[in-house]
Image (cartoon, rainbow, N blue to C red; front, side, top):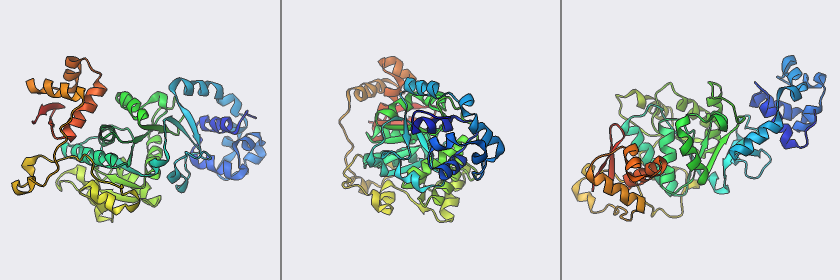
Length: 382
């Protein structure tokens, strides 16, 4: 089978069911191009290490198994473009990993500055402590010009993306599904926000449903794209620990935030620290360890702890909280002056999209003006 371009040939291979990155790479190593591979007879395909008779037969009949024009239309409908390994914008770090994705389905924009990046991962079932640490690290790193990379999953991933956006920084989400089957579905609005100041990436076709195989593959991209990986909160047995192992295999530095010693959600981080990961308690420590990521200036808005947590004699040395509010932030503060409210209640009261309300709440929380209580209820502090 011959397609009109190498890009279309690569896309055809990406659409072939049960044809993973290792086999994909073996095929390209043998034939050098996807176009040449798709012109090869079954006898020559069987000579490729790891393909086997069944896969070779499917490759020879690929025209009957995949529909490249329909997939290209789906991509256009979703605003998705292809990034090939030969493209200059392809993430440099991925090229140094085992079996890097041959192509990426991308929505949004990757920039050369995204090489200054930190992956942030953690548990889907978070504690208040874990969420606060994810906010603090992600907000300050993004404000310092570091691109935050995560997996758009529930829990720590979601908090990391939201905090990076609230800081006005860049963030990249890597999916364990196709763009048309975004998971979890409740993060669809967040994914659109990320595309405005970053990118959402997947190595899977548009309608690929997430499965147990796809998430570890997603995690290797998060680890490979990052200069270092920060684990905020994770049990010993978790996807975050797999991601940490993938980061180590890719030669990346791994950092872990310590947690309460009596909580299972801290077990993974503590094991990583025991096994040699760098213990970090602040974004400044992390930036100090990664000299290549050190920003030129650090006079940036920082997440501040409650004054009640700081000795009175030290409070005078703290930087002043940013007092300037956006129009929407001012409206939210006014609404919270009357009573504590949830994001949905604020969205209804102010006739604003829930995504805008969420961003404003996070910014106000970072500035120290409000606090999140249990049940996603927000209260005014000053």
